[in-house]
Amino acid sequence: MKDILKRPFGLFIIITFFGLLGYSCSEEENDLLAPDNSNPEQSIFNLSVDATEGGSVKINGEDKKEVYLNKGEKVVLSATPDENYIFINWTVDGVEVSDASEYSPQVSKDAKYVANFAKSKINIWLKTNILEATTQITINKVVVKPMQDTPFQVNYNDEVSIAQRRVNSGYGFVFYIIDGDIVSINTLNYKIEKITKDTEIYAIYRETKKEQNHEYVDMGLSVKWATSNIGVEKQENNGNYYAWGAVQNKPPYDKESYKWWNSETESYTKYFVSSELGEGDNKMVLDSEDDIASLLWKGAWRIPTKEEWDKLKTECEWIWTEMSGVKGYVVINKSRDNYIFLPATGYYFENSTHLIGQAGYYWANSLKSGSSEDASYFYFYSDRLLSGYHERYAGHTVRAVIDKTE
Image (spheres, rainbow, N blue to C red):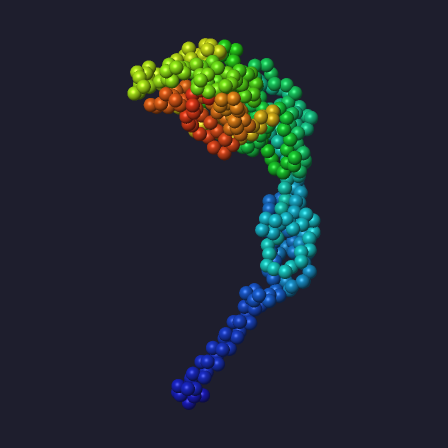
């Protein structure tokens, strides 16, 4: 043996022999720990299990987290809920594969099975921003007082119906906020089809306030906004269409019929800029005697400025919706305790209406800079909010504002 070790060739044979032996042992040991699943003709698979809060799982009746199975080998997964919990389903990668607590999957690939559990009783907390606004809210026909320490309870997956029998005088219902989402705008009743988690329901109200017998709301901005358009009392109605700076509220909405147009001189007689055609009054903002809001609603009411429309656009939350079958935007203030509804009024031009139910066109109180022809307006579609300029003799609707007083 010593002679062999002294010879380089013999030493090489011995090293090679023991190296191969070690490789073979290591390979055999790894095979015992886990299969090589890189082979497309895989026949051994890894199955693992997990559970959400509220229960435990077993594989073939044993507390195991994973097993290796031959293709087609039978396995039984069992899920057991804790006290006050129920089993919901088994999922793989978030997709339900069974709603039976004892489940035998057909194993054909590596997979992780998750047993999902939930509380058997769901807690509902009813809250409000104005406790004096109502005492008659019901959940599943049971009167529930807001702001109680003890929640109302229902079973998992139950239908939940919320209703109001009465809103107290001097207040108006705004909407419900459920888990942060605004629902049931201006509608006293709301239904949750299947409730699956503890839930907070906020009933939001506002005090009814009026100026010159017209209702307004404080949106947390520099002015207070009317709750309806001029010409109607209901917030979802379009109201009348007016040419800018005129009392005209019927067609035709064209230049020849416009109050401030002189057909003989072919020029505007008020609110026009100086040009080669002659000296103008250079008035760019409506006088109160030509502001339809001031004329009809009296007091401090007026048409909004372009900047006030811009603030409403940028400082509030806008939700395209339907109210009493009328499409438009619910505009919600930052504190989420007030709103106005702006119907998609469209506009009049000459003798025809355009885009009613698709867009809203509302006048601002100024002309386009350097122009006698076009006036500022705010308009919207279901997917965008815009400011622009339109021929001043077109027919737009008006949403009035009043300044805040200290």
